[in-house]
Length: 304
Ligand SMILES: Cc1cc2nc3c(=O)[nH]c(=O)nc-3n(C[C@H](O)[C@H](O)[C@H](O)COP(=O)(O)OP(=O)(O)OC[C@H]3O[C@@H](n4cnc5c(N)ncnc54)[C@H](O)[C@@H]3O)c2cc1C
Image (cartoon, rainbow, N blue to C red):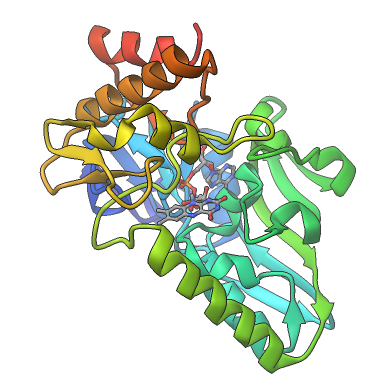
């Protein structure tokens, strides 16, 4: 195989893929279609950034210096009894709908957010009392340090709140295996509908570009509650603002750049710190080039 055989674009604007509708150009963006192509890219590229649904990232408006691999064309999955094996690029809401048809429960929570299997395992996504860690039993990953493919069991995946071993080591998810629970199809569908309904009232939909929760919940509390009480709903900067319906969401009004979001996040962080001496941890991940100002805004929040 050669890199020229794999779909790619030069100077490709990433904002067309991010749910924030923010993000400058990467010098090269790759779209592998098979696991073989993805593994080949991971072998030959120096330090590529691997992204899926781009629904938990703030990509710099100044762009990204590294190669970017978007996994969204890696869409194979199979269902064997109650075990699902899915490639990293399969969309979580799609998987949620597919397993319902087989009367399998455990993915009802995924109906409402635009992640991919790679992103949800990396982040240990959760909602409505369900989490990826409840059902994920193993994963096939590429280790960027040793440039080899590994099979990880559940223990090694080391799931924590909004994190897994993929977040801590240089592991790229190729595919993951999940074991679901057989249940009544109507009951599963009903739960999916209730989850969707809940989101309509409590979260902005993607016609208001956003990246989900901005900060992680601190232990035994809710970031949204603290932000609301600290007065964060009044914050706006440039082309973005905190959403009026929930203080842990930032909305791009249409023309925001990454620095607008970084300023708002920094203000949110400082408001809660001043009022409650609690230092919120960003859930949204920054990717790409930072100038000095943006670097300082993030260094404060990441306590660097
Ligand atoms: C409207 C909305 C609602 C949301 N609601 C929720 C919610 O209820 N619960 C929740 O947990 N999240 C929620 N999110 C956040 C987001 O959807 C999840 O975090 C999701 O898991 C991210 O998946 P992704 O594919 O978009 O990841 P990306 O944003 O593309 O990437 C996120 C991280 O995962 C890494 N990654 C992506 N693919 C791979 C791979 N193959 N191998 C290794 N690492 C990889 C990236 O490098 C990055 O560090 C919401 C987002 C939005 C926009």
